[in-house]
Amino acid sequence: MKRQNYRDRGAALLAAMLTVSLVAMLAAGAAWQQWRTVAIEGTERERAQAQWLLLGALDWARVILREDARSANPETPTDHLAEPWAITLQDARLSTFLSANSSSAAGMTGTDDALAQQVYLSGQISDLQGRLNIGNLLQGNQIDLKSLKAFERLFEALGLPTAQLNTLTQGLVLAQTQKEGASLTPQRVSQLSWLGLTPQTLRVLGPHVSFLPVRTPVNLNTASLEVLYASVGSLSLADAKRLSDRRAQSPWTSLEAFQNDAGKPFGLDTTTHSVNSRFFEVLGRLRMPATTLVERSVVQRDQVEVKVLWRESGSLQ
Image (cartoon, rainbow, N blue to C red; front, side, top):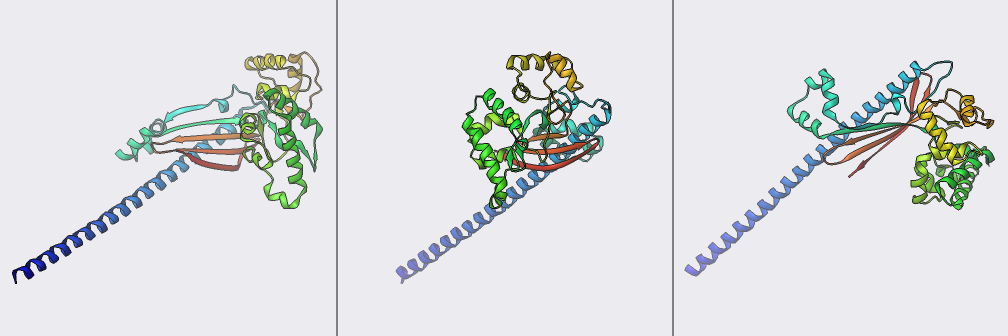
């Protein structure tokens, strides 16, 4: 009888232990699920806030470009690297911007203020007409020979293989002429890999080229040394360096002023070169404790109207 009691007690104890273990497992699972939900919500909220902040930075960049157009001389509009839009915004705490806005700072909680101390904003506006436009390579369904010559000089200056330029031009023509390839026609520089350009070529070429919706002239005031050399036929690299140093002191207000400084008439015209620009890239970077969000936008400025052509964003862990 006692042995039976011991067995019953043992079974009851085992059942109790199993019940406690099961409850503990369910409680742990529920706690983990709740933590995961809160973490996801927090991440999504942080990302949404970051996107709103970067949108505000884009709007601010548009204001800068608009005011630059307002202040320009309508007779001789120029865009150069000494203007306010060309100044890079280095990493700055978000709290610095909020403290400058008393209404925003007044509504912040202690948590918001602590987060603002850990978030850094940086950005840059770049002139896309200071680069060679990939779109200029095409004239209808054919390669524009004048533009091709400029790209040949650019590839030479950058030490890139001619075979990669051939791959680029052949891919552009093929994508333009074949209807089934229309969906694979690149619209951005990063998409040139679709045509067969290698990652190494894109890394070297990227800072010197753009992909714009219309044919555009090169802005002599903002072109890189390599683009200046490539776009002006018969200009040597040494002369390009001399002229680049010269414009830092006094930007050119006309094509004639550039040719006077160069010491020779290159026969430049407004279809291939200019001293002002319409297309700009706005790069915004928001660095947070857990991640960094980067947004890249292309804007078009026509007089004082500045419109966004496209935006893309992504996280850097």
